[in-house]
Image 1: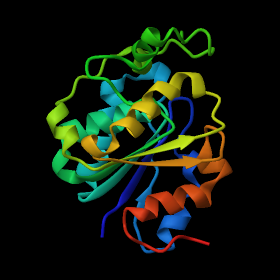
Image 2: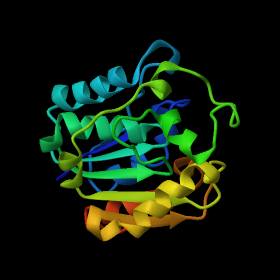
Image 3: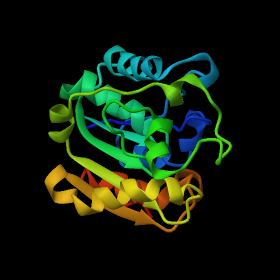
Length: 204
């Protein structure tokens, strides 16, 4: 039975998934939502190491690794370092990482600046992520698009590319009629998507 690890976005902590974790646990799955160190005191590489340390320390294998928002960078880095432990990657309302670019760096070609969104200039968001694309391509992936997200302008090119190339790149794709933080506003609907990867009945 695979475990779930839910990684939060850059300005939140693990408590953002407090409504989702019990829904997974009710079905008998071990689910945890660790808190990353504060972004003003850390780096992307350190966040990746924190999740890798959790997987190693708890001897977690067959993981369904879920990343919301900025955590798309974190879960991609974790999958690059230890792909043998990852069963499935789930990206929730985020920019899909581009090899060699930072989170904010991916926005720039779209004509979107972090200042436009009032986003903090903190190290994890400015650090480029490098990964072996062949490792990532081999891992099944899911993208969850929140249709009422405040980051539609930023995310649109990324989720459109997922839809266009889903079969080639081993992606599933789902939409939620929710704001950006769907694990708070639509926890049951998000849990239904997460449980699909277990072929498990959806929570009610």
